[in-house]
Image (tube, rainbow, N blue to C red; front, side, top):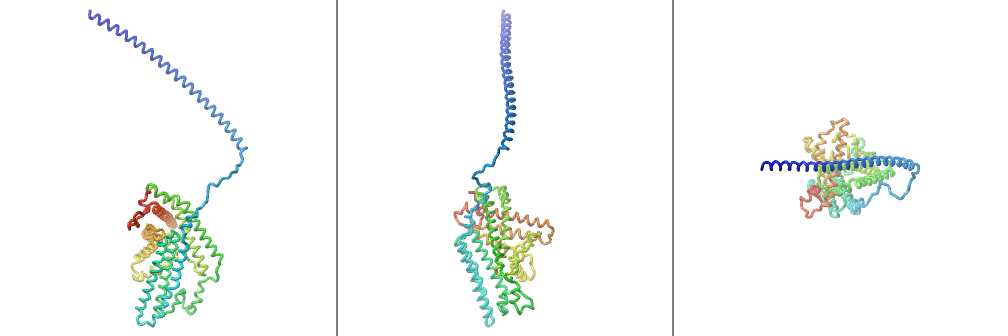
Length: 463
């Protein structure tokens, strides 16, 4: 009996499940049908929208073409009050700042000029008049030479440094004073170097003012000296050279004002990276090269030619064709003939004679070190910070290039190499000096120490 009940229960459960199954299938089919209907309806609406957009775009295109064709015939020039996109406005306040305190520059220059004009000559004149009659000529020479050395150190050595630092001259004014200091030192040294042996040999002092001449003209030195003078002064030539000098000055200022100041003003406020440094160097290559060319043309051509014309000095070989140099050794000889000749005659030859023609490489290295030290001295005092970029370029890279790219290089390819290195070097120098200048402005020293003064501020300044 119990088995029959179990069988009947299973049969009823089976029928119940089949009914549930049928209901589920019916509901699922209804849901699927609704979903399919909705999908088909959405597809139909989307197709209609696409067709409508295509038709509207075609209509818009046609309308635009019609409107454009109409605007070409109806278009007219409209005038209004507006400025040009490229504004060549130049603020001269920075230029006036860099050349500030000109009165201080003038009186300090007059002191240096009058001293160099009078004192060395007077000292040799006294020595020459008393040397032949003195019972102790060596003692006399030591006394006169010692007094002259004290005067040289006081006037040509200490005075310009005192003026620049005490009066806090701006950069351009400082450059004028320091460069004139170096020039007067070179002039006084060359005068003493040439004339002292004449005095010791009891010759007349005035003979050292005239160029070396042959035996034929020794009786008429004045006539020989006139051969080196122009017959008259061409004042229009003087005015033209001064005008070109001023033009170069303003153009160089414009380059720095527009291409360098906007880039380097806020550079110390950015995080340092090699990419930023390389990009800034390439950015400074063009203005750096222009500054090099403008400095050469303004000073070595315009300025020196103007004064040579006013002084009627006929030998105008202040430079040679350095732009055709295929070696750096030739470039150093031809870039500035005046300084090169002074270094050659009064440093290189004298040191070589002391070494009895030995150690030529060492003597040449000494000349490079002297030149590099003087250049760095000028930049340090004028810019008020020690950053030996110029010294490294002269004393390290200059020496290497002088021996590596020497006079044996004759191919025009080496001329391209010389110009390439000049471009890169000028970019590096301008970039580093500008960075250091603005680093000193943005990150002043709280406590002045020796290492703080000699350590480049741009390495750590991130204001």
